Length: 444
Image (cartoon, rainbow, N blue to C red; front, side, top):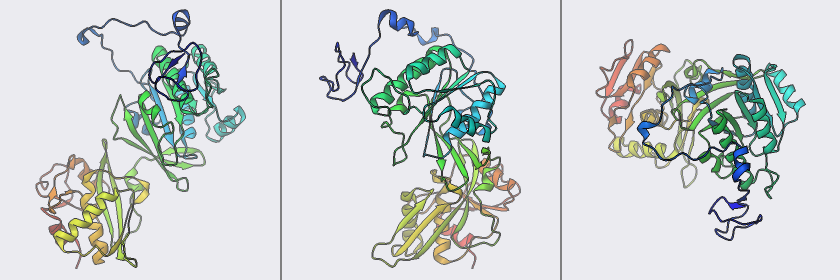
């Protein structure tokens, strides 16, 4: 037996390692014939990187364009993908839909269900129209039998739902514990690398919304995806937070209905309100997530506080950015917001993190405070500095083209961007500071 943390060896299993003091870290160490039987490759001697033979990248598409976008083009052979999200958000639904499409287009897919019976999976598959003879189901919780099924079936993709449900019998720890999760993830990762079969894992999350275990699995796998959204709303966002084979800024947008998760072709329309009458506190911002431009509506409500300490509540935007914009407006424009309650929300459940939304947040706060609406058909973009100046943002042309495509007729942007290609069909209003923007945009 060997401790996974410090390497301490023992002839028998120990609950607590005498070397590092950690609990449930001893695992069976395989050597000689047993290691060879499991396909563990022999170590290669060091050699110059220039002598390592390159290979043309080949990816296996999932059949779902939004999933492929977040993955960077599809599944890489031998990769391990971890999908996390709140209970009931649609993780199993999404993977089952992807599994049946791969099975129908490429070949055999193995779906290991550790939490549901075969009948339960069959009923859900019928509801999702995800029944195919090349989709194999294995209700199994023993990791050794899962490895055996993968080696015998040789599927093009293997799905394990979930990693907390499978366990190793020889490890004296309950399923779902740190030791079990770590050991099972290591074994599946090693199997994926040795066979070239992509492995998809479903991971539970804690109350704080991060992957359980604590974040141990994220360091072991190649790609980590989160499925975000509210179970009481229909829209879901697939976001990549780690990807060794692609960008981590891409998002995929889905709508949940009775037939499962459906791709949203134009997410910008999703994040915009349907009302045609301008109201105070509502501003349209042009954002970019990876390579995708998105128009998002930011709503702000500023009202006199009834308590000694004004409240600052946000949803979908960074609270610190909102506090920063309120301070800039108070110092550089003269708005007395220190005695006001401030509420800011990004419509549609999207989360905005880039600084290009600063101007939209500031304009929404000013519009609500003065109770003056922003004219219809206006989109804004720009980063705001501490002195109140507007700074340029990247990919401005892509943002403007998306706004023009959706019917907007004017855009407010930092000075110097008036000649940016992509603004054809838009009336471009360039400004150097937040104060200039308020004079240009807010109606009298």
